[in-house]
Image (cartoon, rainbow, N blue to C red; front, side, top):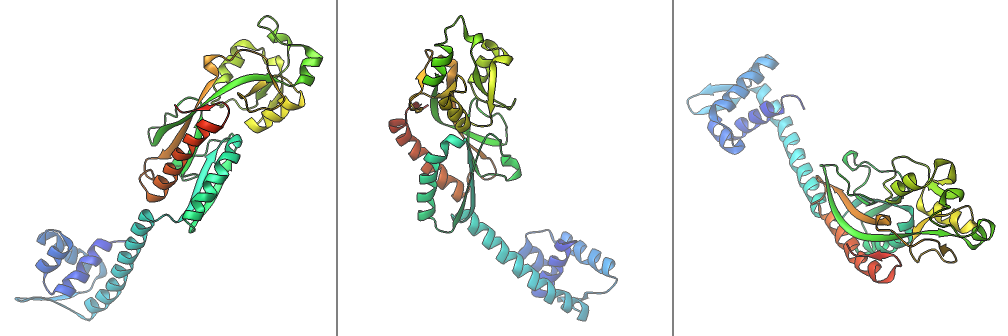
Length: 296
């Protein structure tokens, strides 16, 4: 609202009957209050107060302005209370984004969270896209790979995932077991987006010719499906891909960190702190029960 500070000052002058009383109520200097009244009268082209030795008495125009300003001031106060309450309560939308393979792990955690906090609406967004926390696209992100470097984000380690290189028995029947000497002769499954943060991407780039990556996918679940179908050799979490054969000893650079990422402006809100606590507790269980997962 244009010139709200001046209107609010006029309302408090009318309410207190003196400039000093209004200044004390608003926490501003006496001279600032006088300047606000003078500027508002000049802008509106009407006298709002009659000045006298005992203080300020509103004119008819001043009384009209004070009535409207009172309603607006009360509405702003109520809005402030509601917004503060939202920050202290666990309610409204909660958007969590993660790799597709985390869906079976996250869905039970988020369901229990919603049972505890029934006023929360859950959105679980999975896939390779990096949702922009600064634009409010998500409250919490689980991201794999190198630690995110955006200075506006709060980044916390959650898990480590050990990845292995796998092939289906049907693939090995057709092409044989790969060795360090014949990797370039084999067919690989890879990710189709350059911005991938996957730790194995650099190894693939350094070790495997581009033309050997014959099957490309958009996310980790699709990669697991392609490997299982025999499309080629690809990466999956160690021990998680039933029926596939691990074709090489794992390398240190294939270990992927998983990070909890929140935006600094929302990190301390009750809702975000509540879900972060539940996710960290869940990570303890995952590290004990899920193949290839460990605590950082």
